[in-house]
Every structure is written in C-alpha cells, then in structure tokens.
Length: 142
Image (cartoon, rainbow, N blue to C red; front, side, top):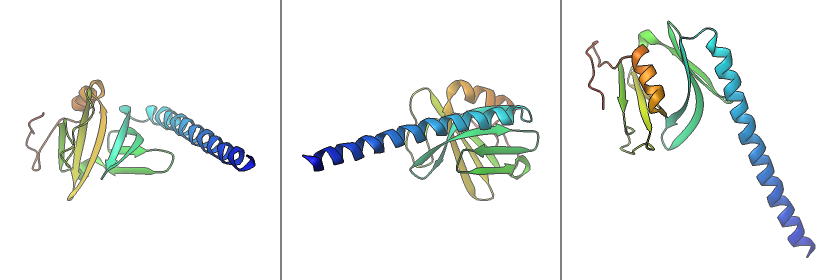
C-alpha cells in the first residue's frame, strides 16, 4: 500500500514538473519575442526543425541578421550568408506539416535550416524575405 502511494506521488510530481517547465518555456519564448521586437522588422513564433526534433523558437529578422532563439539556444546568421530561401508545405525529409502551417527553408553554405510556422505568418515573411534560388534567381513557391 505504501509503495503504491509513493509511486503515485512520484508520477504526480513528475507531471507537475513537466507542466511547470513547459509553461515556463512558453513564457520565456514570449519574453524573447518582446525583446527582439524593438530591434527587428518581424518577430514570429516558429518551430525549428532539426531531424525529427521540433523546437519552439522566437524567429526574428533584422536588417542584417536572422535570429532563432529559445531558452536553451541563441542562434543567428547574417542574411548575406543565405544562399536560398524557399517556402513549402513539407519538410526536406518528405514529412508534411500540420494543416494551416508552412515551412520556411533557408540554405546557407550547404546547411539547411527549416522553420514551421502558421500560414498567416508565412505571408508576412515572404514580404520581407522573398523566395530565391542560389545565384539570386526567384524560386517557385509551393
């Protein structure tokens, strides 16, 4: 009986910790987005996709840099280093994205960066960061 109560208590504690960390992570993402709004042209919530991992990030673009950040990672690169910009409805792995979302795919020096975000946000990103192929050619959008 005591062992059952202990196991149930541990499971409840683990769920509460998970819920707290998830909620706090969302709060930190909002804080990052607010911080970037002052210096960036566009700030959006997105999911950075690396392999099978989807990480929520604050995606922001300034005149010279693109930032993708969350509580565990702060990354950026210069816009001048982007070779290709694509918008698609599936990931490079062939997996489709949820309805109502699209992929912003950036290629820079042989590396691919993919961000999944709502379709309404994609329209705003296309206006600031239009599709293009290597060599400056306009790319076809999906």
